[in-house]
Length: 251
Image (cartoon, rainbow, N blue to C red; front, side, top):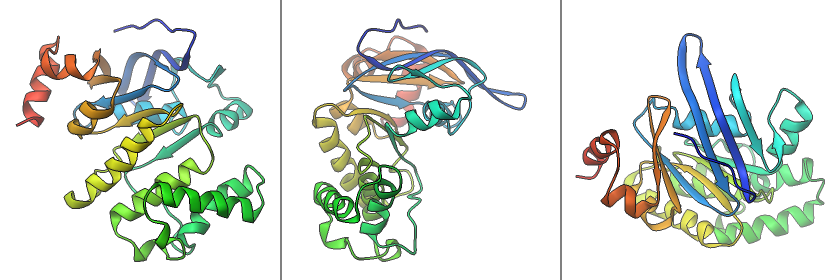
């Protein structure tokens, strides 16, 4: 399935292939994402979703095709990689917080080191972000003192602290207890409602996709099978594989 890139596209993937040894994980991915768009990527485990979004900030290296982020092509040039990573925030399944640093220190560390902000500026922005994700009272606690949902909200605030143009979410609720999932999704819905934040979200949370996504992308066996707005995907999917997958998860 191919897409043509437009002038407002901030992410362009053309014929992207990735192998792990003999395993052909990405098989010719074509996807363009416009600035400010919220795209939900879904599909079965092992379909290549997480690998694909990890190629966008070079956590995984693609072996064939092109990936262009905000006008910069991802190559082996470390300057390009650094430039692209400075524009991208990423939130993983596991929270990856530094256990020996407080919540506020976790959030302010990267802006001080990478953006060269003063401690006072980084901490001021950090507190604003903790307000945004709804847990300012946790600023001086350590990650181990927080619930999983609170830790994931800290991870989102930490990614936002670098003021990225693009946010990538790799199944951000999959490690959470059910009662904590909604608090993280609510933060993500708030982000999606703000202007200018481009979001790619790998998730099985179809309610979130229906409420927030501009488009949904269905991956199967390393390929994009179907792309469309949520209403079409849910009400009139065009491919049997999409119908079969949705019937399994939407009981």
